[in-house]
Every structure is written in structure tokens, then in C-alpha cells.
Image (cartoon, rainbow, N blue to C red; front, top):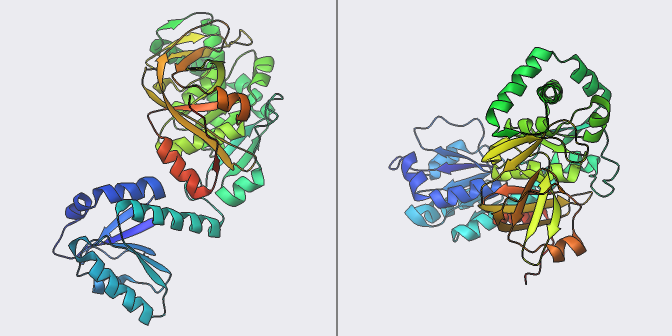
Length: 413
């Protein structure tokens, strides 16, 4: 959503940013608003937004000069600095022009909530959700055979969200791995070994092969202009005797949202938190549940989420390279967006209380102080869930409310 803010020549852009900082930040976070402040001396924009915040009085003629005749128009005016008086004059002028208009007036909460509804209505009318529109996802092979409830309606993704999915033949990747130069792979492998605090099962040759998988996947992502990808990773284990765990960790670090096992619902969860919250996600399996804690684990994690890493073999196969990451004991958000049409979600917040290690689970393990038994054992949205640093539940809930997805609640003991 684009929002123009109009101010008089008696005030500055700095004044507007300071005076309305809380509201502006809310609009940026909740509506993904692109904000432009305009005064009399500001070069006129090529097009005027249909959402205009009136920051001060004395901007009526400025609005009239900039207005391109397209409606309906939403005016924001909280009343400070004669903003409501100016908005009323502008609304009356719009009526004389036969243009539909309205004024949003009230508290920051009231204005932000009304704008979210406008954003949602616009998304429904255009058939896309702006936050994800234009995203390209690569599917490297089909979902793993055991994922029988984690698919997404790809036509719906394109029509509603503007998300395009691209099928990548695994043979193309396999050929790319085999053709990757050894010296280039060894250079990448050495860089990762230098970052790690330890290396147990993998050899230097294992590291080089895992680096080839990373370089081959990255090359295809660049060729296909992919923003995100997921891979039927166990076929790579069987065919190339290596894993994609290290590749996915590095790709996430580099801004390409990367998930495993072809799980599209979890990949969309990861993609959303990257776009909405600016956070990389740890895609993990719920593995041990108690009345007070939940432990999740997986063999790949973005390296930048970890305080340190140990290079291990892949848990199930004992082959290749996996990541045993140590995460900080801090606040996290657990999230899953699910259903073939992504019409439901689960989100909660918790604190990490332990970074355990057991040979009975995937290599990176984290225990959080939340009881998810009632949710996971009765109403779970699939297997994989995502974990992100910080407390982002309210931000995610606001997006889901806008989109219309239904929450699954956890009854707290």
C-alpha cells in the first residue's frame, strides 16, 4: 500500500516523522505501507496515492494540485496540527468533483485497523496479497512421500497471492552437482569449516560434496530467478551420496528462503515470516512433548541464527553434512501456516530453556517452555513448524486477520 503524507510549508519532513512516528510505523508494519512525505516544495510524484495522510492544515491546494482524479480516496487525519480541518475541506471538494472519499479519524489503533481492512479489501479485489506478489518458488522434485498433508493449491497461490511456482527436474540438479568444479567446492567447504566450532562425522571430501550441492542449487536459483525453494532432499542423498542440509542453511543466510522435503506449507510459513517480520526461520520437527515444554529438531538451520555450529552427518542416513546449531536461550515465535489454501494457522510465543542433544533426534535441537500437547496431538497443522527469533505473534495475527485465515488456539494449563 502506498501512502502520501501532505504537510504545509511551515513544517518539515523531520517534523512529520517525529510527530507521527508511532502511526507511521504501524502503517509500515501492518499494511506494508510505502510512505512518501510531500510539501509544496517537494517534486510532484508521478501518481497520487489513493490513501493520503493529512499531517497539517494548509494542504488543501496542494492536494488539489496533485490529485489525478482517481477515486475512491481515503484521507487519514487524527486531528493534530489542524489536520482534521484540512481533511474536511478536501473531502467536501472531492464531493464536488463526483469522487468518493472518506476520512479515517481516531486513535492510532482505530486508524491502523481501518487501513488493514482497506488493504485486505484491495487484496481481494486485485486477487493478490501485495506482501507476496511476484514471488517465485522453485520445487526441486516432488514432495517427499511421507508428506501426505503438506501440499498447497498452486493455482490458488498464483491467483490469490501472486506467487509463481516453478518445477525443477531433480536430474538437472544432479547433473549440476556432478559437473561442479572440485576447487570451487573445496573453497566453500573450507569457509564453512572455518566458521564451525567442531566437525565430527564428515570428512573433508564429504564437505566438498555438500558444497557442490549448495553451488548447484544456488546456480539454478539464480538462473530461474527464485526467491524461495524446497527440495525432495532424500533423493539427492540416494543418488549423490550427499545431503542438501548445508546448502539450505547457506541459502537461507543469503536471502533465498529454503526448505526441505518439498513441504510447501512450511515453505510458505518461512517465506511469510521473512517478508513480514524480516526473520530467518528454523524449519523443525516437533520431537518431544511434556506438560511444560516442547522440543523441536532438524538437520538444517540458517547459520546466522546460531551462536555456534558443529558439522555433523545427516541424522537418518548417517551421510553427508548436517548442522548441529546452538541457538541463544531467548524469546522465539512458533508458527505454521497451513491447509491447501493456507486458510488456517497456529502461532504462539515461548522462551528457549535448553539446547539439548540426543542421538535419537535430528542434529539441531531446541527446547521451549510451552506446552503444545493440546495443539499438536489433536489439531496440528502437519509436521514441520517454523521457529523465529523474537516475539512476533501479534504481527502475524494481524496479517492473518487481514487475509482471513482461521487461528488454532492452544488451551493453556
